Image (cartoon, rainbow, N blue to C red):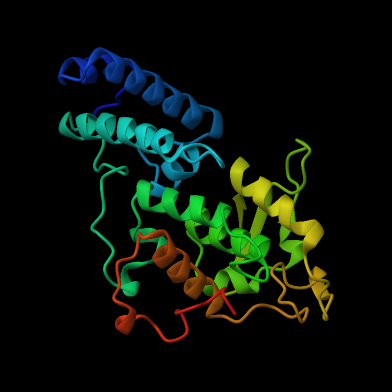
Length: 259
């Protein structure tokens, strides 16, 4: 593939479509802002994943239609770029409808599906769960960073670090693989704000080694290993994103967060 300059493709992309003038201008603005975001965050525009687009498009409290418009603009732009062989795939492409809990893994979600889950996590209250702030952090780590349940449960408070002196709390997460090797993952701004909102309300851990588990249950111990994925399934079902008959739901999933 050639070394494409994405901003040079913006007008060509819009010229190939028959969008109404207002839609065309909105799409131009959204795509330009997305490319600017990639540059600011050090993301290669042609190497991003669906969750990067979802985290950018999702603004807590914003109307769903605004999120949908931003994602639609980026999806259309990437579809054009893909046709021009400017990138190997469209990271904003629509995914299949979720009809099975087994499909609900962060790596398989498209940007809109991820954004729906993030919005649903934002809306959780004490009537939905005993620890809605914990649920929100847990869900954001899965959807926004693509972490697996086992990785989330292992995170300790000391794994949150401040690498850049930007204020506002920790900005980096240290993760370990099965071999004990560590890697540092930068927390996107929206994920960082969710973590910071949770920390003052975190249950003190029984075991303070390494600061104790980041996500502590009401008893002060780390959450069960199955809780993150079951939370995601529950939120997906409640939001209407996961279309699973009640008889086919996982017995643990049904009602999670309600009891």
